[in-house]
Length: 481
Image (cartoon, rainbow, N blue to C red):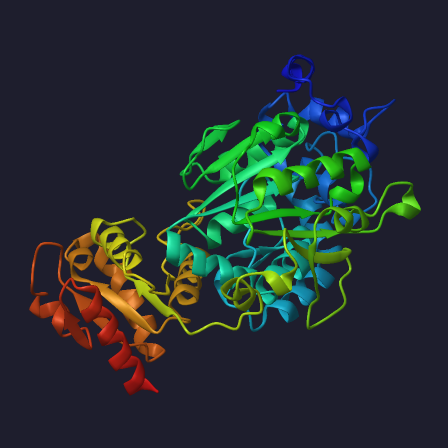
């Protein structure tokens, strides 16, 4: 893509001021970004095995020395396990303690959990790796998405449409994209970035999520990742449920920011679409303040804040094509998290998208005007070994985070009939019972009765009928309250 850039720009009349790296990313003299790209582009064993060590250009933090302001890493051979462990012991404590305070009351499914791959390091807290980078994502970006009601809005859209489409402008090494795909499996995620940066994010996401589809340029990739070089962004003529940019627009040139704003207005945002943006005011560094430029381009602006502390990474905003007063009531209510209580359900699974699991979700999705959320996620990081003590703890907490928020569990007898699945459904039942969550039994597809064994495990059994299922949830939820 880097080699193709000049020819594409010339053939298609793309503004070079938009297409080529500029401002903080410009190529001039001895450029650390350019040198790091050349190093990672070799894709040798050291780079692939410790890719995360080479992402300092995006985070400003030396992963293996656990410090800011250190020279850019060139080779990893000297960073032995002993060296890294000593650095963690000396410098990671403040991030660990701050992370514990920040996440004490947060549902597990919203925690930033970086895969234990590609040289990731940090303190292991019940299977979750905690370091500067995971804390940085958690502290502001994810917290803003949750507290603003954006996550609730996306959950509602998933329930209504079965899929959400997200576009991230400048994804760095892919950390936020990784979080989104874990929390929203039904998300189709597009990244527009400099092709040099796409090398990092595409490698990271492809290697940590080999179960997902990948694509380049404009062809949609359902529920996977799609990568579009910035110089080809004009050809991406479709709308998204959410567009994101964090911490990079104020490192661009004014030409680039205004070009992206034009694309937001012409193609990427619908009338009730939203653009989540957080950037620092970098004018004191000779760059710009993205918020000032966007304010002149986009009429709808809603400033975001956090309850616990002031923002450290710059002003955060939601932008839209209309003033927020003119947005549809449903959109405004979702943003402020003032919505009617949906049907929050957990469909039993054994880490597969079983036929019954998929069919039930499709059936509920087709119910007119039904607001429901499927909290079950039949996936966990394959790098986690559930047979180890730490891996077992992680799997249990991951299941607990899926089950704890729901109004009812739908126990799929067809899945339970598979012997290899039983240990997982037994664990899910145990978690539900410990939290007094009602359990509704559903017969296998094509049958009208659940087995006697399963009937003894559930509170109520119903047919494959959406009205019956929802009525059972209402009855059990009312009895519980």
